[in-house]
Length: 483
Image 1: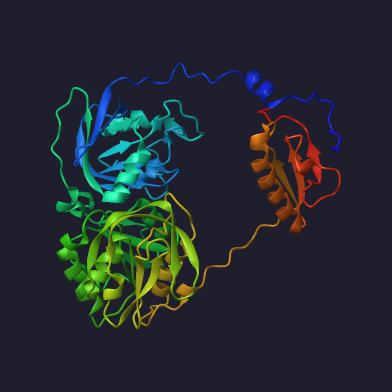
Image 2: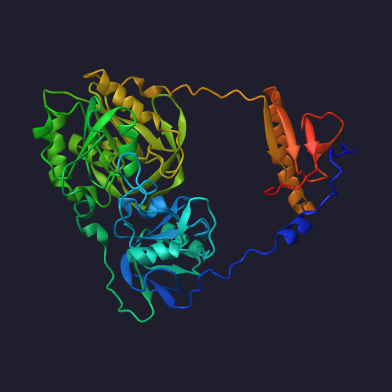
């Protein structure tokens, strides 16, 4: 028995609604016909279609499991010199935001640096038709503008499995009609010197907390997270004389960045002076910053077989037992078991057990191998910026102790929630949607929240009139459209 619908409007099937809206007009979408080949150093070749710049490029082929956020990934300086293999099958369907729009700090609002740093891009299915409220151009147009080659029609699963089995591998995207570049290992170069600022820059000028940020390839959202919490951030080059700034800064930050940390001996030597100085001030390092501070402390680093790159990496807090889902992008790791006695591991990876952060036992120094600035990715660990700046604000000279608590988030109070149903579905599809929708309604009702279900699958238990826990309080069999 079903609840009578509260409208005289005729019941319209999903197929009828789809046909009534008409097909999506893709006549203006670009067509790509130029051939390209992805060649790997092991001799394997993968043929596809070019949808990026009309040029060939060599680099280290790596994969990321991120499902969204390709504008952020491509502009992440940590991808300098790498050809990015996207494991998510369809890429480009939400386009690219305006790359010229600036935020209140004068930084590109939707990007993590001022240009694309990846050497190339590999996708299975490129969507030339894009749709998003914030999109200003297609991914292809942006890649062409930036001079970055990209190849589509590739079995990215096969590439990923090869990298997982054999490790990151040198490769090249060769676009038809262009010269073939030689294979190259970008990690032999000082990639940090290529991406680091050449001049000192200040953000949030006048804010009370003075933070010196060593730019090894800093993501812009790190600057945003620090400034919006009351910090004046002075960004300096990777080889800057840190000790000369000791009288100015209240806290020291070491950023993320690309490449092998063993090549950055100048930065490591600078950090050694700081951590062994009699003047003790809080230090926080992210990603490469974790490895550099660890090397300064006396630990070693090593290259991971295929790295951790994506937005779903589990990390365990060894102090509390808490687990977080994190965004990561690194191909090297710190020898967590190689630390001197005054240091200890703080975080470890839940998948492979690799080090994800360290902490000093008696001084306010700590790190995170993952990216708490979450651009893109989950916000689980954004509180680490609060931990760092709280220590700075308190002029802490002892160990970090507030790290074990996650901030209390005030839950908004809702009385009613609108639940959008799945509409008409085939029998094979209905079970999955019916279960997820029912669980959502049950959870809301447990919180004494009234549920209003619109456009349900007519056979759903959510519409039953027998007062089950999965039944919505109000049901409307109406199509959802722009009107």
